[in-house]
Image (cartoon, rainbow, N blue to C red; front, side, top):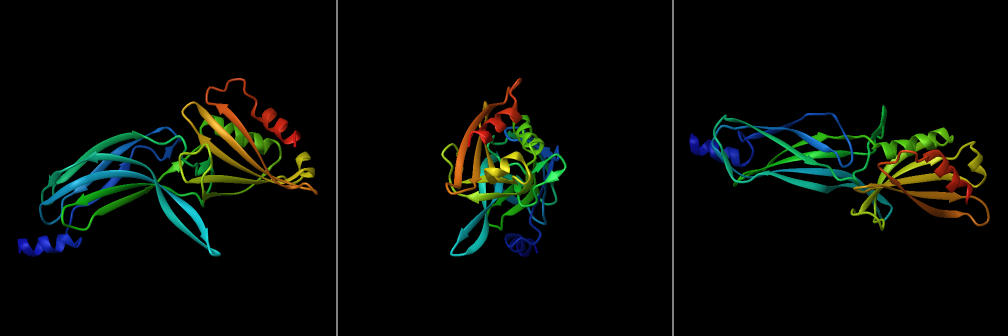
Length: 250
């Protein structure tokens, strides 16, 4: 019977299970993420090769008129290496690490970006058996320097349209994707010059780079770009006035 149970465990039947419980439901770029990993032994003793945590971002790619999505790992944290879990044993392993500053945001207050998906994946690498994994959705809220920028766009009359994560590389970025937060100029004073504005945040250790893609109107229209660095310690920095200055300079 023991041999039969071991054979079943190699294909995932009666194998160890993993479940990660996070200490918070809201996270921030560059902030700490922590929790407890619960591992429950199966019907037989098993050797665990590794226990890893990965932060995944779902990225949209387009090719030959087709759109598809793939997960990109932006951070990986090794929790434990070789250990054994006995039959029906329960193990709890606490963890903590820091998220990348460049992590996309998936919500602003109560406004959810439903197309932005960031996950924590827990990988339990079992020797000679099917690996077990657990996925937890992460709600990533903006840092104050980001939130103040988004609030400024709202106060200037721009209308939020959508947000996507696109495949591609931006010079300041460490990743091969970037987030676009798209706004319509609508009936603002800027609508004479531009129709839409797309904003990308590139988070750094000391501040955030704002990249504005502006869809200009008129004979000399087309996309134009502006960059603005905002320090995290931004007391006295007037986001609304700086954005107004940029938009009026077009």
